Amino acid sequence: MDKVKLSTPLCNVELLDNEKWQTITQNGEIISFKFKQERPCLIKIEVHFNDDEVTMEFTGKILKDDYPLLMNKFTIRKCLDAINELGICKMEIEKVLTNSKVLKCDVTYDVCGMDLEKFKNYTSTHIINHKKWNIRSFPHKNNFIIEKEVATARLRRKVTIYDKGAELDKRNNATFFEWVENPNEIINHFKGCVRFELSLVSCSAIRQELKVQDCDLISVLNSNENPICEFFKNVLRDDTATIPEVNSMKLYDKMNTLIVNDWDLKAIEQKIRQLYPKSYHSYYLDDYRKLIDAYQKAKYSSSYDVSHFFEDTYVDDMTIKDVDANYWQFTFSDRVQYLTDFANGGMDFIVDVSH
Image (cartoon, rainbow, N blue to C red; front, side):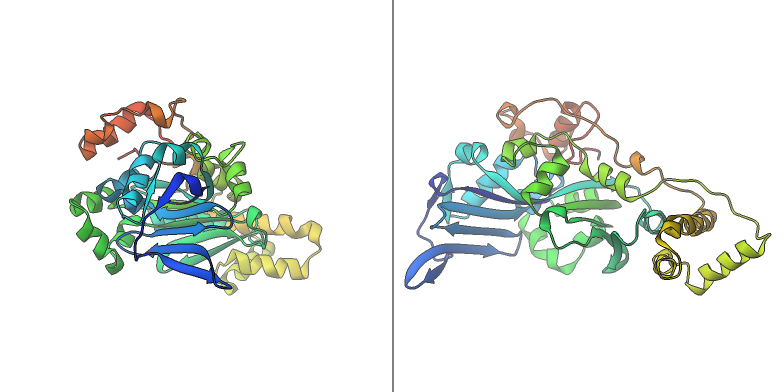
Protein backbone atom coordinates (compact mmCIF):
# COMPACT_ATOMS: atom_id res chain seq x y z
CA MET A 1 0.00 0.00 0.00
CA ASP A 2 1.17 3.52 -0.62
CA LYS A 3 -1.43 5.20 1.59
CA VAL A 4 -3.46 3.99 4.54
CA LYS A 5 -5.80 5.35 7.20
CA LEU A 6 -6.01 3.45 10.49
CA SER A 7 -8.05 3.75 13.66
CA THR A 8 -6.98 2.42 17.05
CA PRO A 9 -8.34 2.81 20.60
CA LEU A 10 -7.03 5.83 22.48
CA CYS A 11 -5.69 3.57 25.22
CA ASN A 12 -3.02 2.35 22.76
CA VAL A 13 -1.58 5.85 22.35
CA GLU A 14 0.02 8.10 24.95
CA LEU A 15 -0.30 11.77 24.03
CA LEU A 16 2.75 13.91 24.69
CA ASP A 17 2.75 17.58 25.56
CA ASN A 18 3.70 19.07 22.23
CA GLU A 19 2.84 22.41 20.68
CA LYS A 20 2.40 20.72 17.31
CA TRP A 21 -1.09 19.53 18.30
CA GLN A 22 -4.01 21.65 17.15
CA THR A 23 -6.71 21.74 19.82
CA ILE A 24 -10.36 21.55 18.71
CA THR A 25 -12.99 22.70 21.18
CA GLN A 26 -16.78 22.69 21.23
CA ASN A 27 -18.79 24.68 23.76
CA GLY A 28 -15.60 25.25 25.73
CA GLU A 29 -14.76 21.54 25.87
CA ILE A 30 -11.76 19.94 24.17
CA ILE A 31 -13.14 17.31 21.79
CA SER A 32 -10.09 16.48 19.67
CA PHE A 33 -6.43 17.03 18.87
CA LYS A 34 -5.17 17.23 15.31
CA PHE A 35 -1.74 17.03 13.73
CA LYS A 36 -0.95 17.37 10.04
CA GLN A 37 2.34 17.26 8.17
CA GLU A 38 2.45 17.60 4.37
CA ARG A 39 6.19 17.26 3.76
CA PRO A 40 8.53 15.45 3.54
CA CYS A 41 5.74 12.87 3.79
CA LEU A 42 2.03 13.10 4.55
CA ILE A 43 1.09 12.28 8.16
CA LYS A 44 -2.30 13.13 9.65
CA ILE A 45 -3.27 12.15 13.20
CA GLU A 46 -6.55 12.93 14.92
CA VAL A 47 -7.46 12.17 18.52
CA HIS A 48 -11.21 11.93 19.15
CA PHE A 49 -11.81 12.05 22.89
CA ASN A 50 -15.56 11.44 22.72
CA ASP A 51 -15.01 8.25 20.73
CA ASP A 52 -11.84 7.17 22.60
CA GLU A 53 -10.22 6.75 19.21
CA VAL A 54 -7.09 7.81 17.34
CA THR A 55 -6.99 7.87 13.53
CA MET A 56 -3.72 7.95 11.59
CA GLU A 57 -3.25 8.52 7.88
CA PHE A 58 0.15 8.32 6.21
CA THR A 59 1.89 7.43 2.95
CA GLY A 60 4.70 5.05 2.08
CA LYS A 61 7.22 7.89 2.06
CA ILE A 62 7.24 7.61 5.82
CA LEU A 63 9.65 4.69 5.22
CA LYS A 64 12.29 7.12 3.92
CA ASP A 65 14.93 5.14 1.99
CA ASP A 66 12.73 2.05 2.09
CA TYR A 67 9.90 3.82 0.26
CA PRO A 68 10.21 1.43 -2.74
CA LEU A 69 9.16 -1.43 -0.44
CA LEU A 70 5.87 0.37 0.32
CA MET A 71 3.67 -0.46 3.31
CA ASN A 72 3.12 -4.14 4.00
CA LYS A 73 3.39 -6.66 6.81
CA PHE A 74 7.17 -6.43 6.66
CA THR A 75 7.41 -2.64 6.92
CA ILE A 76 4.38 -1.63 9.01
CA ARG A 77 6.39 -1.54 12.25
CA LYS A 78 8.84 0.93 10.74
CA CYS A 79 5.91 3.18 9.77
CA LEU A 80 4.58 3.21 13.32
CA ASP A 81 8.06 3.74 14.76
CA ALA A 82 8.44 6.78 12.49
CA ILE A 83 5.23 8.27 13.92
CA ASN A 84 6.56 7.74 17.45
CA GLU A 85 9.76 9.55 16.43
CA LEU A 86 7.72 12.71 15.76
CA GLY A 87 7.56 13.21 19.52
CA ILE A 88 3.87 14.07 19.63
CA CYS A 89 2.69 10.67 20.84
CA LYS A 90 3.95 7.30 21.94
CA MET A 91 2.13 4.29 20.56
CA GLU A 92 2.34 0.80 21.99
CA ILE A 93 3.31 -0.82 18.72
CA GLU A 94 2.20 -4.37 19.56
CA LYS A 95 -1.23 -3.20 20.68
CA VAL A 96 -1.67 -1.00 17.62
CA LEU A 97 -0.73 -3.89 15.33
CA THR A 98 -3.20 -6.27 16.92
CA ASN A 99 -6.00 -3.80 17.66
CA SER A 100 -6.41 -1.43 14.72
CA LYS A 101 -8.82 -1.11 11.81
CA VAL A 102 -8.02 -0.06 8.23
CA LEU A 103 -10.51 2.65 7.22
CA LYS A 104 -9.06 3.47 3.79
CA CYS A 105 -6.14 2.33 1.70
CA ASP A 106 -4.52 2.63 -1.71
CA VAL A 107 -3.51 -0.80 -3.00
CA THR A 108 -0.45 -0.37 -5.20
CA TYR A 109 1.24 -2.28 -8.00
CA ASP A 110 4.27 -1.11 -10.01
CA VAL A 111 5.03 -2.37 -13.51
CA CYS A 112 8.39 -1.62 -15.11
CA GLY A 113 8.93 -1.40 -18.84
CA MET A 114 5.28 -0.79 -19.75
CA ASP A 115 4.48 1.60 -22.59
CA LEU A 116 1.99 3.84 -20.83
CA GLU A 117 0.70 5.45 -24.03
CA LYS A 118 -0.05 2.07 -25.62
CA PHE A 119 -1.77 0.82 -22.49
CA LYS A 120 -3.91 3.95 -22.30
CA ASN A 121 -4.97 3.55 -25.93
CA TYR A 122 -5.75 -0.11 -25.40
CA THR A 123 -7.79 0.69 -22.29
CA SER A 124 -9.83 3.41 -24.01
CA THR A 125 -10.95 0.95 -26.71
CA HIS A 126 -11.64 -1.98 -24.39
CA ILE A 127 -13.76 -0.54 -21.59
CA ILE A 128 -16.78 -2.85 -21.35
CA ASN A 129 -19.20 -0.11 -20.33
CA HIS A 130 -18.33 3.56 -20.82
CA LYS A 131 -21.50 4.57 -19.03
CA LYS A 132 -20.41 2.72 -15.89
CA TRP A 133 -16.70 3.45 -16.06
CA ASN A 134 -15.22 6.87 -16.73
CA ILE A 135 -11.70 7.46 -18.10
CA ARG A 136 -10.06 10.83 -17.63
CA SER A 137 -6.53 12.14 -18.06
CA PHE A 138 -4.40 13.89 -15.45
CA PRO A 139 -2.10 15.95 -15.51
CA HIS A 140 0.32 14.49 -18.07
CA LYS A 141 -1.32 13.33 -21.30
CA ASN A 142 -0.54 9.64 -20.74
CA ASN A 143 -1.51 9.45 -17.05
CA PHE A 144 -5.14 8.52 -16.53
CA ILE A 145 -7.83 7.43 -14.08
CA ILE A 146 -10.51 4.78 -14.44
CA GLU A 147 -13.35 5.24 -11.98
CA LYS A 148 -16.86 4.19 -11.19
CA GLU A 149 -18.68 7.39 -10.29
CA VAL A 150 -21.32 6.55 -7.70
CA ALA A 151 -22.58 8.42 -4.66
CA THR A 152 -22.25 5.45 -2.30
CA ALA A 153 -18.71 5.10 -0.95
CA ARG A 154 -18.87 1.32 -0.58
CA LEU A 155 -19.50 0.98 -4.33
CA ARG A 156 -16.92 3.52 -5.44
CA ARG A 157 -13.82 2.26 -7.22
CA LYS A 158 -10.94 4.19 -8.76
CA VAL A 159 -7.65 3.10 -10.29
CA THR A 160 -5.03 5.73 -11.03
CA ILE A 161 -2.36 4.83 -13.60
CA TYR A 162 0.66 7.09 -13.93
CA ASP A 163 4.37 7.36 -14.60
CA LYS A 164 5.81 7.01 -11.09
CA GLY A 165 9.32 8.05 -12.10
CA ALA A 166 8.04 11.30 -13.63
CA GLU A 167 5.80 11.96 -10.61
CA LEU A 168 8.75 11.69 -8.23
CA ASP A 169 10.67 14.15 -10.37
CA LYS A 170 8.23 16.93 -9.49
CA ARG A 171 9.37 19.89 -7.47
CA ASN A 172 7.07 19.08 -4.54
CA ASN A 173 9.17 15.97 -3.80
CA ALA A 174 12.34 17.99 -3.25
CA THR A 175 11.86 18.00 0.54
CA PHE A 176 11.46 14.23 0.58
CA PHE A 177 14.72 13.68 -1.33
CA GLU A 178 16.55 16.04 1.02
CA TRP A 179 15.22 13.96 3.92
CA VAL A 180 16.41 10.54 2.71
CA GLU A 181 20.01 9.34 2.67
CA ASN A 182 20.14 7.82 -0.83
CA PRO A 183 17.77 9.74 -3.13
CA ASN A 184 19.40 8.45 -6.33
CA GLU A 185 18.69 4.85 -5.34
CA ILE A 186 14.98 5.64 -5.02
CA ILE A 187 14.92 7.63 -8.28
CA ASN A 188 16.62 4.80 -10.16
CA HIS A 189 14.26 2.23 -8.66
CA PHE A 190 11.17 4.00 -10.01
CA LYS A 191 12.62 5.09 -13.36
CA GLY A 192 10.42 3.65 -16.10
CA CYS A 193 7.82 2.35 -13.64
CA VAL A 194 4.10 2.68 -14.24
CA ARG A 195 2.11 2.75 -11.00
CA PHE A 196 -1.39 1.36 -10.56
CA GLU A 197 -3.24 2.56 -7.45
CA LEU A 198 -6.62 1.16 -6.46
CA SER A 199 -8.33 3.46 -3.95
CA LEU A 200 -10.53 1.69 -1.41
CA VAL A 201 -12.41 4.34 0.55
CA SER A 202 -14.69 2.28 2.79
CA CYS A 203 -14.51 -0.80 5.01
CA SER A 204 -17.01 -2.53 2.76
CA ALA A 205 -14.79 -1.97 -0.29
CA ILE A 206 -11.74 -3.24 1.61
CA ARG A 207 -13.51 -6.42 2.69
CA GLN A 208 -14.86 -7.06 -0.79
CA GLU A 209 -11.70 -6.40 -2.78
CA LEU A 210 -9.21 -8.02 -0.40
CA LYS A 211 -11.53 -10.94 0.47
CA VAL A 212 -11.19 -10.45 4.24
CA GLN A 213 -13.87 -10.97 6.88
CA ASP A 214 -12.93 -7.83 8.79
CA CYS A 215 -10.81 -4.71 8.39
CA ASP A 216 -8.36 -5.55 11.17
CA LEU A 217 -4.90 -4.32 10.22
CA ILE A 218 -3.33 -7.77 10.34
CA SER A 219 -6.15 -9.28 8.28
CA VAL A 220 -5.66 -6.67 5.57
CA LEU A 221 -1.87 -7.01 5.53
CA ASN A 222 -2.07 -10.80 5.31
CA SER A 223 -4.50 -10.82 2.40
CA ASN A 224 -3.14 -12.62 -0.66
CA GLU A 225 -5.68 -11.19 -3.10
CA ASN A 226 -4.71 -9.31 -6.24
CA PRO A 227 -7.53 -6.74 -6.53
CA ILE A 228 -5.96 -4.68 -9.32
CA CYS A 229 -5.85 -7.72 -11.58
CA GLU A 230 -9.50 -8.45 -10.76
CA PHE A 231 -10.40 -4.82 -11.40
CA PHE A 232 -9.11 -4.93 -14.97
CA LYS A 233 -10.68 -8.32 -15.62
CA ASN A 234 -14.04 -6.76 -14.74
CA VAL A 235 -13.53 -3.43 -16.52
CA LEU A 236 -11.79 -4.42 -19.76
CA ARG A 237 -12.72 -6.88 -22.45
CA ASP A 238 -10.00 -8.78 -24.24
CA ASP A 239 -10.80 -9.53 -27.86
CA THR A 240 -9.02 -9.76 -31.17
CA ALA A 241 -9.65 -8.10 -34.50
CA THR A 242 -8.15 -7.83 -37.94
CA ILE A 243 -8.10 -4.73 -40.12
CA PRO A 244 -11.33 -4.90 -42.12
CA GLU A 245 -11.56 -4.11 -45.78
CA VAL A 246 -14.13 -1.40 -46.46
CA ASN A 247 -16.21 -3.38 -48.95
CA SER A 248 -19.78 -2.40 -48.06
CA MET A 249 -21.84 0.72 -47.46
CA LYS A 250 -22.61 -0.52 -43.96
CA LEU A 251 -18.91 -0.64 -43.06
CA TYR A 252 -18.32 2.62 -44.94
CA ASP A 253 -20.96 4.34 -42.79
CA LYS A 254 -19.41 2.99 -39.62
CA MET A 255 -15.98 4.25 -40.62
CA ASN A 256 -17.41 7.70 -41.33
CA THR A 257 -19.09 7.69 -37.92
CA LEU A 258 -15.75 6.92 -36.28
CA ILE A 259 -13.99 9.70 -38.17
CA VAL A 260 -16.71 12.29 -37.43
CA ASN A 261 -16.51 11.40 -33.71
CA ASP A 262 -12.71 11.46 -33.71
CA TRP A 263 -12.62 7.72 -32.87
CA ASP A 264 -14.15 8.48 -29.45
CA LEU A 265 -16.01 5.33 -28.41
CA LYS A 266 -17.66 7.06 -25.47
CA ALA A 267 -19.18 9.73 -27.77
CA ILE A 268 -20.43 7.03 -30.14
CA GLU A 269 -21.94 5.09 -27.25
CA GLN A 270 -23.92 8.15 -26.17
CA LYS A 271 -25.36 8.56 -29.67
CA ILE A 272 -26.23 4.87 -29.90
CA ARG A 273 -28.12 5.14 -26.63
CA GLN A 274 -30.02 8.13 -28.01
CA LEU A 275 -30.88 6.63 -31.40
CA TYR A 276 -31.41 2.90 -30.84
CA PRO A 277 -33.55 0.78 -28.49
CA LYS A 278 -31.74 -0.51 -25.43
CA SER A 279 -31.66 -4.09 -26.72
CA TYR A 280 -29.46 -2.96 -29.65
CA HIS A 281 -26.90 -0.96 -27.65
CA SER A 282 -24.37 -3.75 -27.04
CA TYR A 283 -24.75 -5.10 -30.57
CA TYR A 284 -23.89 -1.83 -32.32
CA LEU A 285 -21.28 -0.76 -29.78
CA ASP A 286 -19.42 -4.03 -30.17
CA ASP A 287 -19.02 -3.38 -33.92
CA TYR A 288 -17.44 0.02 -33.29
CA ARG A 289 -15.24 -1.34 -30.53
CA LYS A 290 -13.85 -4.04 -32.87
CA LEU A 291 -13.19 -1.48 -35.60
CA ILE A 292 -11.35 0.87 -33.24
CA ASP A 293 -9.38 -2.03 -31.78
CA ALA A 294 -8.37 -3.24 -35.25
CA TYR A 295 -7.00 0.15 -36.27
CA GLN A 296 -5.35 0.74 -32.89
CA LYS A 297 -3.55 -2.58 -33.23
CA ALA A 298 -2.39 -1.59 -36.69
CA LYS A 299 -1.07 1.68 -35.29
CA TYR A 300 0.57 0.31 -32.14
CA SER A 301 1.47 -3.13 -33.56
CA SER A 302 0.42 -5.09 -30.46
CA SER A 303 -2.37 -5.63 -28.01
CA TYR A 304 -2.27 -6.47 -24.32
CA ASP A 305 -3.06 -9.49 -22.27
CA VAL A 306 -3.95 -7.54 -19.13
CA SER A 307 -3.40 -10.48 -16.79
CA HIS A 308 0.25 -10.54 -17.95
CA PHE A 309 0.90 -7.43 -15.87
CA PHE A 310 -1.04 -8.53 -12.80
CA GLU A 311 -0.35 -12.23 -12.51
CA ASP A 312 -1.95 -13.95 -9.53
CA THR A 313 0.76 -14.94 -7.10
CA TYR A 314 0.92 -15.87 -3.46
CA VAL A 315 2.79 -15.72 -0.19
CA ASP A 316 2.49 -18.15 2.66
CA ASP A 317 0.77 -17.52 5.99
CA MET A 318 3.70 -15.81 7.64
CA THR A 319 2.47 -13.13 10.04
CA ILE A 320 3.90 -9.82 11.18
CA LYS A 321 5.43 -11.38 14.29
CA ASP A 322 7.31 -13.95 12.18
CA VAL A 323 9.38 -11.41 10.28
CA ASP A 324 13.11 -11.97 10.69
CA ALA A 325 14.34 -9.90 13.63
CA ASN A 326 17.46 -8.99 11.63
CA TYR A 327 15.41 -7.77 8.65
CA TRP A 328 16.10 -4.07 9.25
CA GLN A 329 19.81 -4.70 9.63
CA PHE A 330 19.99 -5.73 5.96
CA THR A 331 20.96 -3.29 3.23
CA PHE A 332 18.14 -2.02 1.04
CA SER A 333 18.99 -4.36 -1.85
CA ASP A 334 19.20 -7.31 0.57
CA ARG A 335 15.76 -6.44 1.98
CA VAL A 336 14.32 -6.48 -1.54
CA GLN A 337 15.96 -9.89 -2.10
CA TYR A 338 14.64 -11.11 1.26
CA LEU A 339 11.08 -10.29 0.23
CA THR A 340 11.63 -11.77 -3.21
CA ASP A 341 12.91 -15.05 -1.80
CA PHE A 342 10.12 -15.16 0.73
CA ALA A 343 7.48 -14.65 -1.93
CA ASN A 344 8.95 -17.62 -3.81
CA GLY A 345 9.20 -15.73 -7.05
CA GLY A 346 5.80 -14.05 -6.73
CA MET A 347 4.62 -10.92 -5.02
CA ASP A 348 2.16 -9.85 -2.40
CA PHE A 349 -0.43 -7.36 -3.67
CA ILE A 350 0.85 -4.79 -1.19
CA VAL A 351 4.48 -4.71 -2.18
CA ASP A 352 6.31 -4.75 -5.47
CA VAL A 353 9.35 -7.00 -5.18
CA SER A 354 9.94 -7.41 -8.89
CA HIS A 355 12.88 -5.01 -9.15
